[in-house]
Image (cartoon, rainbow, N blue to C red; front, top):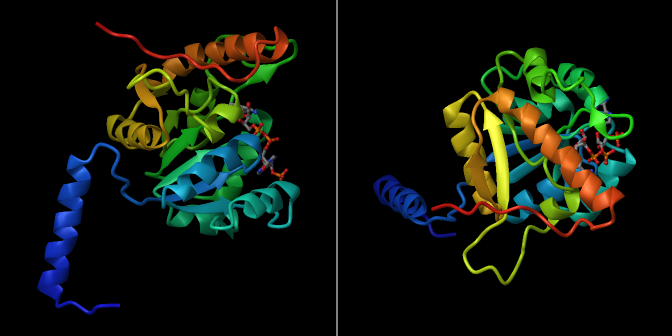
Length: 240
Ligand SMILES: NC(=O)c1ccc[n+]([C@@H]2O[C@H](COP(=O)([O-])OP(=O)(O)OC[C@H]3O[C@@H](n4cnc5c(N)ncnc54)[C@H](OP(=O)(O)O)[C@@H]3O)[C@@H](O)[C@H]2O)c1
């Protein structure tokens, strides 16, 4: 390793940051934690770790099948207890079964000020909205962690698309990732992560818009998995 003086090192770091700001897909490495590392969690964590982010699984049981499967596939993933994983994380993904959200968040501890990406969906019997269409799941999640900055994202498609977002043959048109949240700065960070992961982030508004995103999820599941269209489709945003 070449050792540089402090001022030279500072100049190089500043140059890197300016270059990163100019480059659309430049990756600013972030500390990310995952609560839930099953189909959705491992797909997203795997892509983020490949991009160079530091990704830690907040594991209630480090020897669980989902943790072992994710590590076998993406050996650069780190594992820690939930409180240890989230304490340093800038962004935390919640990818647990909806009914487990509250206990999983309680086990993680203090999330005040953290960006919490809610990937979960309240789905009830016969593919209906689990909160009777009256309140979004993400608002319920926000009520569990009032001081966190909840952004709903990575919910409206199947996990297969989070593992591979490429839809070749459409030129510059990217698949759309609809997001919602009350904190503008948090949505900017999540939008940047969406771009790095190959999506066009589409900000649909405040967190209460999640109710509509959850219905898009039901639409996607019924088309893809019930009617047999298959998981290999997403939506795009056309504007004029
Ligand atoms: N599957 C999809 O295509 C899809 C797409 C979009 C959104 N979603 C939503 O994403 C969420 C996760 O779905 P998934 O398919 O990834 O589920 P999954 O494969 O069953 O994985 C669930 C993960 O949550 C963990 N978990 C379960 N109960 C927990 C608890 N009480 N405390 C802490 N961790 C717990 C599990 O850990 P253990 O291994 O230790 O049990 C596992 O790592 C759901 O809310 C779902 O609606 C799913």
